[in-house]
Image 1 (cartoon, rainbow, N blue to C red):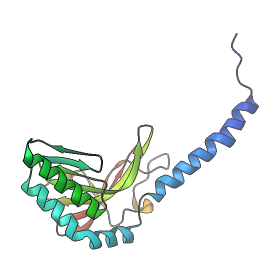
Image 2: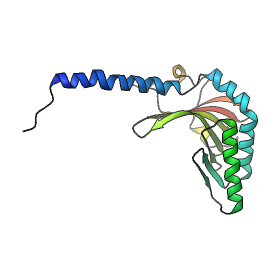
Image 3: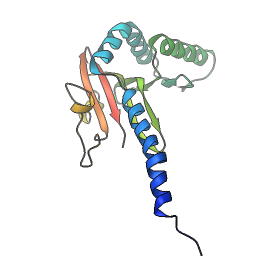
Image 4: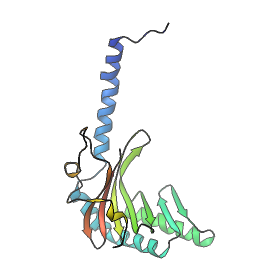
Length: 180
């Protein structure tokens, strides 16, 4: 016969173990995304680097993804090595975590801030460059601010999952991805 845990044990675990962990997670998660004014200032300080990344990706459709830990290039040989090195160099210079080259969707996405894991909600923020005909602009929500109070809230009080954009001009946007 299996004994059920007493209510005291369950309450102890909930109050002294789970509650502090959930509170710490919530505080950390929110602290990873900057206020709009900081994101705009960061963009202005690194605009040349971001323009260079977009230019490299526009010319080299073979580059599909680059992160500080991996680069996907759909070609091989000496040219692939040079492209990988160029990608890493621009990441380091700009302080970005990764970028994605979605040329079919007409978008270059440069991720600078964020956090995510398999069992928690993902929150990412950075900068998108869109071609005027980009299909992504059809399903993203364009908002005047990307701070928590401006993001739509769901029925349970949390932020609605989705892709949110704040225009910067010249095809550039600040993006925020809210996971579920």
